[in-house]
Length: 257
Length: 257
DNA sequence: CACCAAAATTGGTTGGACCATTGTGCCAAT
DNA sequence: ATTGGCACAATGGTCCAACCAATTTTGGTG
Image 1: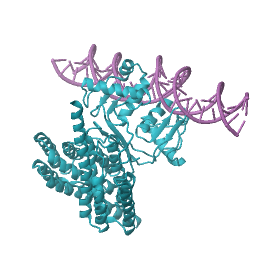
Image 2 (image 1 turned 90 degrees about the horizontal axis):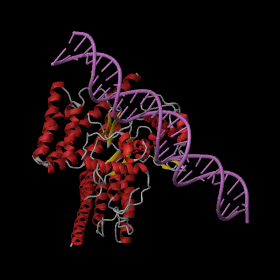
Image 3 (image 1 turned 30 degrees about the vertical axis):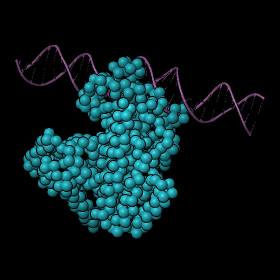
Image 4 (image 1 turned 90 degrees about the vertical axis):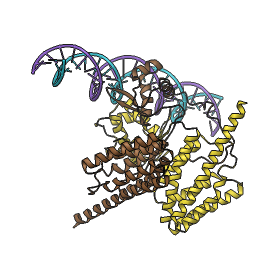
């Protein structure tokens, strides 16, 4: 069986007590998970120093560092020389760590890849939201929608925060927390290398009307309609991306002349 | 967390070096990327030993190990004690990494959540595969399909390895590496707590025929049909899960009496 | 109290040593 | 000539002790 990219299994182990199992750094991470949860540490809090951890766990500092390096790579922890190691995200047992990798993050195809994932997931989330939305959910989504529309008219353009809040409300209504997590990662990937939409001034503008039509479908408990509107919304973003890519190609051509 | 959609006025071009901290292990990874590309190393190939790398790069072996640990955590590399360090995925400059941590549990709802994600993504992957499959892709998928069917008939039941290989072939044909990465995580999350499908003896059995119908749709370059078959396939897994949950509930009831 | 320099703290790096696992090749028995 | 097993080398994993570099704390001085 082909193993997933990365899966770590967190099991119960004594808190900050000597480790004995093979693969020491795994054991260190297990113990660290339990320590964090038992101490109730939250993002921003400081972890014990490497030397303290090494002493308590009866392993060398090298092993502790190797374990912390892995957590750092997963974005769970941040290290500041001279200061300490700080928790960067919530850590609990039974969490699945999945590092996503795009072979070449800044070309047109890779950006389109993130949209293909969003296309599949946002459509599905819209379906589930339409099926499961309570009256309170619908009221909440509408509130976010109105806020977004107000911001749009005030600024004559899409406002990223309010836009995201609206989508977030839809994802949460779906009742499946994975949608929010994964789509947020796609969103982040997309904008990491495209913070500046290649010459597309009114980026996202075309998606505006579909926010309300999506809401209407959800409010009407119409899964099929919700799916259709979600797809239309994503399609406008794909169009923006294609226009940006075209602009870029034109610029390159011009600069060559 | 989430970056704005709007145009940012002050954007640092990724081309200009963003003054990354002059940290050694980062430099080691950059050098390794160059080495891998210049040598044309491919997944499965062996990297130089840690000692050799340390000597050539003029850094300590500890630093090399820290860098390799990070690549290992990203799934780019696999280390085998006594054997060596092996490339596990394509490595290029401009790779984009994003760690994603997902909540997971062993309850019925959490398992169903993973299937909801798969429903959205597998359907989309099937569509893209049907749109983009080359003749070689189709031959490759069919080869995996036949292997799976042979294993099925030989063992009178689904074989997880061959089943996964088939789906993997479909995902890869989609041309989007994110499908494989995300769905693999869902697959793992699903089976982590459900290695023994709760009393469902013929788990996965019902999904068998839809593998070939899915293949037929892809081979016919029929995206709509491929989507439909992928959805049917996932639906059978959802049914199995529901049956398992029902069995479990029954057992609990019986044990209480 | 405000400010600054020295000292302590903490993560980052180094070199060397040894352990555990794996791969290789030699050699003897068949 | 083939095979089986065993010694040995190669390689990643762990440990230790020391030092470097950045940061924080401390304590004294104006």
